[in-house]
Figure 1 (cartoon, rainbow, N blue to C red):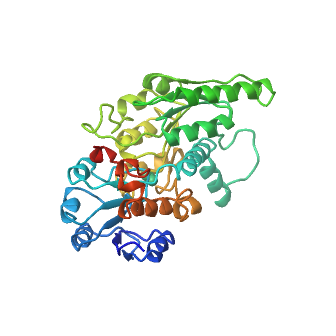
Figure 2: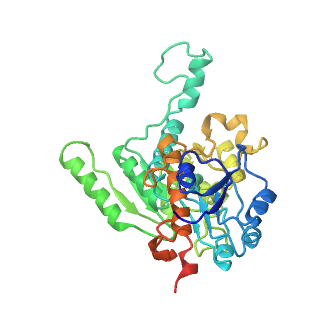
Figure 3: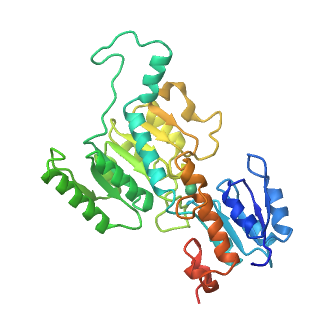
Length: 369
Ligand code: GLV
């Protein structure tokens, strides 16, 4: 039986927490649905906890690490993204933090794909038409048409795990695929997808030749019918290739007027004021967003403008919100399970207590020999 560890969870992450209770941990869970106030997080950390379970709603920075000085051993985040955790501060205080990469890859990519389809085929507008009893006849093109996804060209901006999963899904719809990544290119994966494409053609599963290739950002913007964004949020100074406002007035204007933008990555990658203008002035055909510069989306957001309503789909940071993906206690299936396992690895000294060998720890650089 491990020694009794004290853990505070800023949110109820479901039955995966029972794994800790069964191991004799003393666990306190913030019971309300909304995020706890920052002062409460600091107070709980100060009280002497060994581990802190967080979500992307919590701001984890020097103040939190200072409060945990001498006793806080790990921050376990239930998300793949960790832009709410100040990595430099974590490293300065030598506190490892974990995330839940991989288990939400397919769910997020499929949601991005569905958003793309819902946007292009105007499913929301079509359902409104039916529900509001405005569907008065079948007509070849009235009151509106949508755009097919099949056979079109999609640009995948960011070819990390989720971008690659999105490529796989787009390939199933015989799309041509432009890839762009500011930091890392996976040519082996892209070559494998081209082989699948060629096999589908050779066996008569598809009719025409389709392709996939890495291109420059400009080329991706210029030639794509759909752009799906899968980069992490990196602000100026955090990387040589920052992604903050990667989509701005200049880059949105480079897209085709018939093109659609889909963002399931992080809100600040897209300048929302510029995007609302792009939709109003029809620089692009439409956008579907699951993430925002400020979450929840403020009541006065320009993205809520009724003028752009039928071309702007808005979702509540929902891409990973599928039952197994969010809550399975199996660390190979669920974010909650992986979050708990990341916490256990550090507290119970798995991997010979070598933090650099622990698979879910993000900031390994602070613990090298
Ligand atoms: C969701 O946005 C995540 O980072 O897990």
